[in-house]
Length: 364
Ligand code: PMP
Image 1 (cartoon, rainbow, N blue to C red):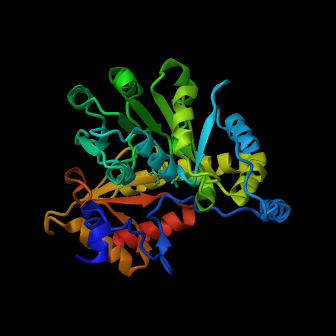
Image 2: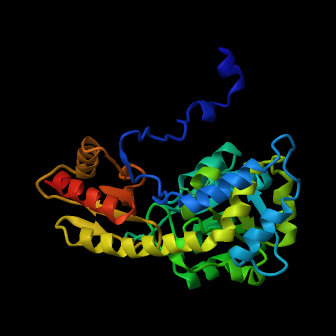
């Protein structure tokens, strides 16, 4: 046996690494990034703040100032604390590690965010995927049945969901959170909250097993890598024990403290993207052979169909977009429900128009 076979778990060896395509030279509409960069005034304010940041010291261990700024800006209820992560990806990893008792299970509706299943696997937990309805709404009966059967330690509900953009019914979610009860945590993942404008954050006091998770990535700060989650003190205290020390660096902290003083800029951008979403959605829906699913996020899931083409028409359209230097996400292979589906990030009016032009050519 080779060294790798001797030491690396067989299931890890069988994995493929999280693939991020090289987007150099492409119009990048695959990763739900905010297309707007910082204004010159904000760049200057940030440069000043970063230049004043001491890099020779570790971050302060409790991140008190950053947590206070996040709590006031993002409506965390009084008395509720936060745990911070290097992106919400790291929070998902921390929750998985903390809950990975032998035999522990993770449950989520599918199609869903890929890291829920991957992180469960990394931590040695079984993942149970519960199919959504064909219109990507929550199949509440199937969720309740799966919860009763598996008693999962962790249940994820992305609100709105990725890659479908669906905003699940809040009453269904409440029923699921209550059904899980004391036997598991329910993570309401609000990565796309700026585009949905609804949240479970204020509902934390109602459910002792509820964790609300957010990120600043989709707001326009994907590069600084900051996620945060709130829950009861009892839960947060345990999750914090598996957090790598100093996991959020001082440059991220300085950037957040500076930029949250200008939070209105990001809120205006989110408002613009919401209106561009509805415009792009109706433009796409007017094309024949294109189905657009309702989205409360900064992306649109569409299905393409053409009776004269093969069953994998979505791949053809994706390739024709690539040939025109447009990168979207081809999600067709992710799940049976997503056949011939593409996921497109909503961007500026100019970039949306560029996409639309190329897309019409790709449909021919
Ligand atoms: N949750 C959902 C639903 C997502 O779609 C993503 C990113 N695509 C994340 C979490 C991770 O976000 P980040 O690590 O950038 O905070």
